[in-house]
Length: 267
Image 1 (tube, one colour):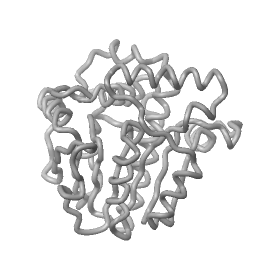
Image 2 (tube, helix red, strand yellow):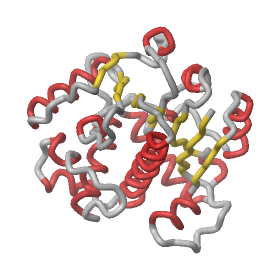
Image 3 (spheres, rainbow, N blue to C red):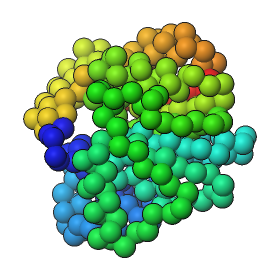
Image 4 (cartoon, rainbow, N blue to C red):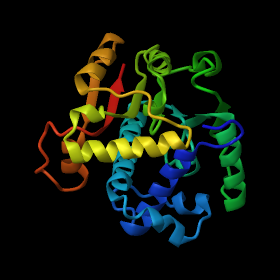
């Protein structure tokens, strides 16, 4: 991302979340603040309508993550850390009494979010703390205070990190028994059939032009081995087939279909 400017991909993700509320009536994931925080005319949001697959993937990954968080709260987790928060609205509609939220993002993106919150009249709750961190240049471990099992919500970030940046953050999550994380990752275009590979490469080219290139891909066995090596024993990885069956009523997608994944792991 450009210095002094908010993340353009964070804006895109927010637009997809908002468009899902309009086009699918929030059927997969309901967010009453998604449209409001953007402050854009409906026709601008619907300009993303042709990219249905990406819109529904973002809705499904958010639903999966917030369902996993709800289960963690039942187990006693009382701290949520939202890594790369962008315009995520969970902290402002938090349904869990006693759950405190720390939003972590680049300072430039956080300044943009504060402006959007003020313009849309969305108040920050007392349970929220904001922490400005550049993941590639600063140590999150030196800035983040953890005093018990913590849930990390890490969506739409991992592909934009270097492997080292990803590894450092994952080690922080693994530093305490009971910590849990949900993140999404992309498989390499090289494992896909030609038409899907071309579509993914085109998207990668678009975000690179915005100054936010995709830097890291994983294969399921590879990321499972890395997580296991850090002590994660409870891993749930939903690729295209399981996402389609779980959220879209599509049990016909072949189980080895490559694509975007959303993964939950508990230490």
